[in-house]
Amino acid sequence: MSKNIKLISIVLFTLFSFFILLKGLDKSNMYSPNIQKSKIDFNFKSKYLFSEDEVFLNELLNNEGWSLINIWASWCLPCRDEHVFLLNLKSTYKLSIIGINYKDDEKNAKQFLSELGNPYTNIITDPKGINSIELGAFGVPETYLIDNKSKVIIKKFIGPLDDNSFVELTKIIQ
Amino acid sequence: MKNIKILFKLLIIFFFLQNYSWAETSGHVDKISKNLRCLICQGQSVYDSQSDFALSIKILIQNKIDEGKNDEQIYDFLKNKYGEWIVYDPEINKNTFLLWVLPLILFVFGGILILRKVSIR
Image: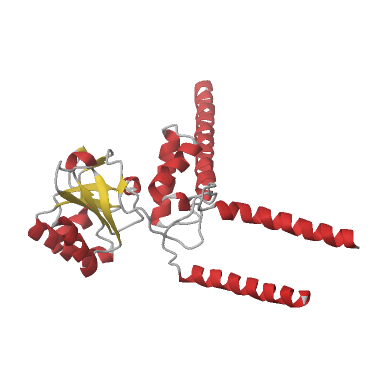
């Protein structure tokens, strides 16, 4: 009798372990922060692209409405795909879009913008990738919707913008 | 000639001092980055990874050290940005409670089992 109980408990424990492992396999390995709304320190200085002048990021945010911060680079292929969405947001919704040019070459960035169009109200540079870390970024492209009044990130889009994220974005800002 | 020798010696000392301080600080960055998980790589620490993310984190750590921040402040800064997941050494809270307590429970349970077996013999 006790042998049976032992056997059943071993089988149950093994099944339980496998279940936990299976659950773990299902989970995406890419970490994304649980907190979508987060207050971020926008108080860091950065150089404008195509100029030697420096500016604090919070000086670029208005006091009302919405702003979009987009981290991009000319060498980043998905950035090309999402560019059309940024142009659309700029022309249709008159959204203020702040670009952060990530670890890029100025010449290539210029060519990228003249080829695809410039949706950005302002572009600042991040040659070492440190400013993006201040925003809690993982890489390029990433887009943050910011409530200008409270200076809070309302929504983070990790990866390129697509149809779904575009719809989600426009729903929030309308 | 004598002056040149002195100058040469000074240059050598200066060079070694430079090298020494560089090795010291980069060692410090290594120590911290070994405790950080590279969030966009699989199973690699920030120290091991050559991804853009990891390289930027290493530069940031160096900058924070230069600013005079201590290890705890640097870990806190990164935890604030990326959550508890970025450190390999998780704090005890309600989410990680089982992680910390389970090995202890298993250890005590195993000990009791062994003791019982020994005393039965």
